[in-house]
Length: 91
Image 1 (tube, rainbow, N blue to C red):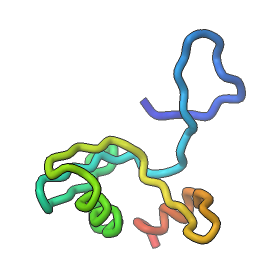
Image 2 (image 1 turned 45 degrees about the vertical axis):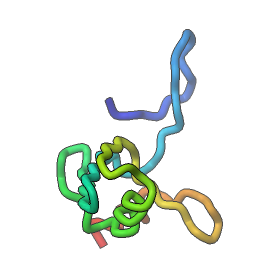
Image 3 (image 1 turned 180 degrees about the horizontal axis):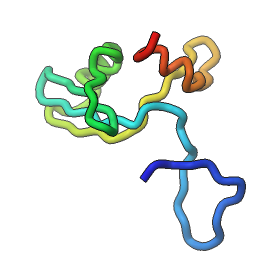
């Protein structure tokens, strides 16, 4: 299910999290091989070489990670907007 913004949280016993403005992806690691795929199973590994390095350094040899790829501005520590992230794929 895709996240969507709402003006008011529903009442009741719900769990929620912030809507990250990034790319939903699944990452598979098998030894030194890392593959990053989009939510539509499109290959994205070549666009995020630093993420491949981080996965190899920080995750077990056989891993599957489901999450959102976002970009952080190294100077301010703030999340960058989606347009900046999209430039990785469509410069």
